[in-house]
Image 1 (cartoon, one colour):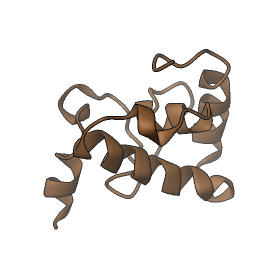
Image 2: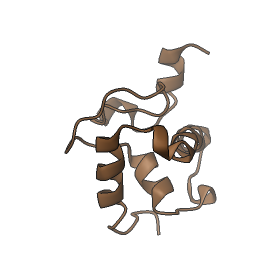
Image 3: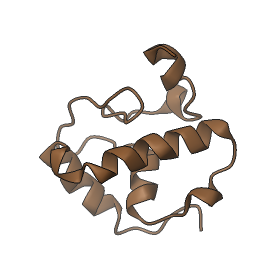
Image 4: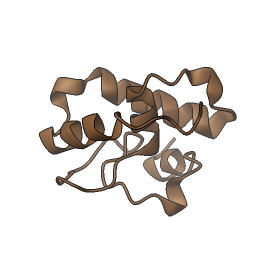
Amino acid sequence: MNQIQQTNQCPRWDNCSANYCPIDGGNVHLRGEATCYYMREVLKGVPEDLFKGDGERFAYGAANDHIALWDELPSALRRDLKKAAKSPSRRR
């Protein structure tokens, strides 16, 4: 599967403004930029079974893989994700 096919699997792809996308392998993230919805939800501890459909599960899995590599993420992204994790999940 090529990169375009992968990114199109994310249900939020068309309206997402996050520059760092775990599906396309990441990118640059500057302080204060939007963060990936699925990365925020993984960091908040939202269980995968709350995500329905193949696209949501695929995006959640990619986000989970990137969160597992926390120390390798850009420092600005880690900071913004920590800040976002303080708010409650929309899934619960």
